[in-house]
Every structure is written in structure tokens, then in C-alpha cells.
Image 1 (spheres, helix red, strand yellow):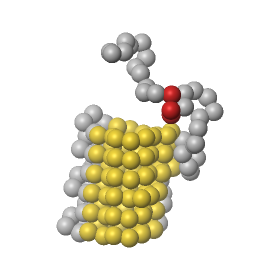
Image 2: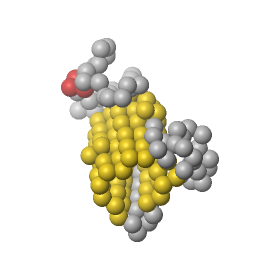
Image 3: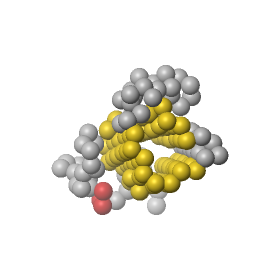
Image 4: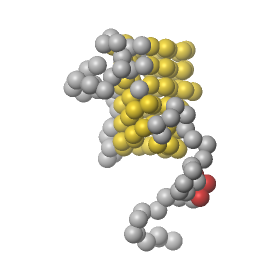
Length: 148
């Protein structure tokens, strides 16, 4: 797929095709795609893609469920994300919701509000086998002092 900023993407599992929801377009419903998907317009619903999903700077997505190989968010996304590979929120991106992914990248200037689980599994784990559980409180910087 051509990546979000015109750079070739070699991570895609799509079949080489790219589906585009262009700026000024609005779609609602369920999308299931073998191809990569680029959203510059608005989408509301459920999305399952075998390839890469890229939400452009002017894109706005509201998903009860978004399942994909890799996800790039440069616009707005509200919902639940399950990515087998990577989720990248660019400096212009805002993601509100839940993320289960193998890798999470949040660039400087990006906004992420919600919960995340780093997992190689398809579903986010209900609890961790080792380390702190999600209910143990906020994450504090290592070696730092807590203001209070």
C-alpha cells in the first residue's frame, strides 16, 4: 500500500488494492475488506480489514470495532481497535477508546485517551499473568518523584 504520507508501506497484508473513502464522503455500516483502506472522509460502523487502515488528517472514524493488521491514525478515531501488528497515532491524530495491538506508537503531539493492551493475541487479555493489573492505579515514571 502507499502509506499515509505517500511512502510505500511494506507491512500490508492486503491484496495490493486500496479502498478509499475520500474527503467529503460519509459511509455508515459494516466494511469487510481484503484490501488496504484509506479514510479521508467519515466512517461510522464496524470495520474489518486484512491489510493496513490509514485514517488521514481530515478523516473521522467512529467504530464499535475496528480489526486490522496495522493502523495509522492522523485524523480522529473513536472506538475499539484490535490490530495484529502496529497502531501508530501521528502528531495530528487523536484516538479515543481501547487498543489491543502488538505495538503502539504515539508520536509527539498525538492524543490518546483510553486503555491499551500490548498483545500478540487477537483479543486483549482480561488480566496480566505478571506485573501490575490495570486496576492497580496510574503508571508512574521510573526513578521520578510523585507530585502530590
